[in-house]
Image (cartoon, rainbow, N blue to C red):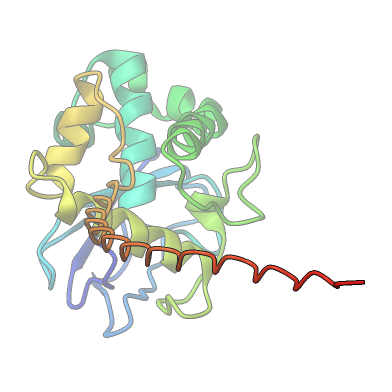
Amino acid sequence: MGSPIVAGTLSAKCADGSGFNNAVTTQANGTWSGAVANGALPCALQVTGGTPNVTLHSFATQVGNVNVTPLTDLALALQVNTLSGQSLADWFAAPNTGSADFNSVAGSLTTAADTLRAAMAAANFSLPSDWVTGSTAIFNAPFNADPSSDSYDQLLEGLAERVSEDANLADHSALVDSLLGGGTLPTTPLHPLHPLHPLHPLHPLHPLHPLHPLHPLHQSERLIV
């Protein structure tokens, strides 16, 4: 979940019924580049296959940088489910129909990001400074796959770590199912306290030495006058 997807296949389904003009595959660092026709936006996006093999979704409302990550997938999953009760797989099969059509999703993208942001804040995740309430930064803020310096990649790594440590979550898909079922994001596990070391037994006090008896004072010799 925190690693870039290498050799994944990107698909687009756009408002005008078209998709990408070219075959789009993710690079070794997870980046990708695709082109759509003028007037095609907005578009629903999906990445499949690659390494690691995971299916993720996103949504593009304008040209420029668009992210497809576990964060965009979670935000969309929650919002689409709220709008139509659909899973992302069912929604992506025909994304411009029903109550979660392009206009509805595009108009509620900020709500989608805010809902996920609130859930992550409640689970004590450290959030990027530019992902504020009312921002769709998770969908379009450029970032690098470098957890040593990039706050978004650090967040993705932290999410991946928590999922891997939760015995009830096998993978990202299980996390999505859990959230849609009313669950919460995994929190940081509490580390068990180290047992207290037993106190060393007190050493018995040494017996007091008996006091030496006082020597009687010698009587003074009486003077004889």
